[in-house]
Amino acid sequence: MPTDAQLSLKTRRSLFASLLALICIVLVYAAFQRDRPWVVPEEVKKLKNPIAPTQSTLKAARGIYVEECAQCHGKQGKGDGPKARLHFPAPADLTDSRLMNSVTDGEIFYKISEGRKPMPSFKKRLTEDQRWELVLLVRSFLASSSPSAVEKKPDAARKTPAPATNP
Image 1: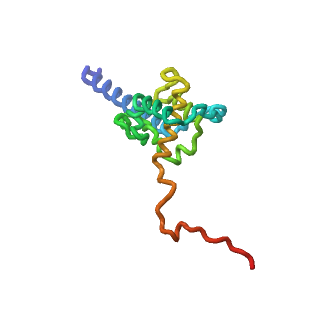
Image 2: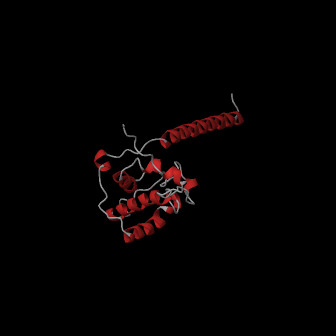
Image 3: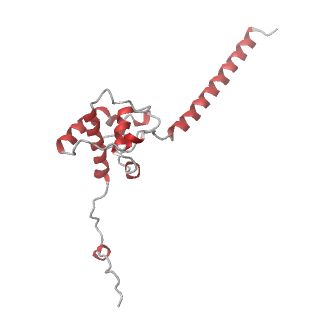
């Protein structure tokens, strides 16, 4: 007949094994979730931003962004805010041209509106116009992070060769 100490040891081993299995399951689940794409309805992807990009619109959006988004996405949208390290998956780098050129304004609006863990939904916290203004601001991060249109190159490199002509 097992003693109380033996039962206690078996119970602790079972609990430890269960806890270890649970941790493994959570880690595997998190790894799969990290690379899971956002599922945005096709009709939403086609939405166009009804708000014009003006200085006052961007200023209003900047205020909302600083209050609601900068803690995770960072002041300049690079995904490096003070709370960024606390989240998995990490906040998106809104200055990443590869990422931002592959999404429509409707997709950005949807992501702001609906959220996805760890990002909250802003559908009830912000008006529709405020969310569209944030889309404009997010787009402005890409424009402000890209190199200037005129690069400093030697004169010879800037010239285009004359088209070849047939004699």
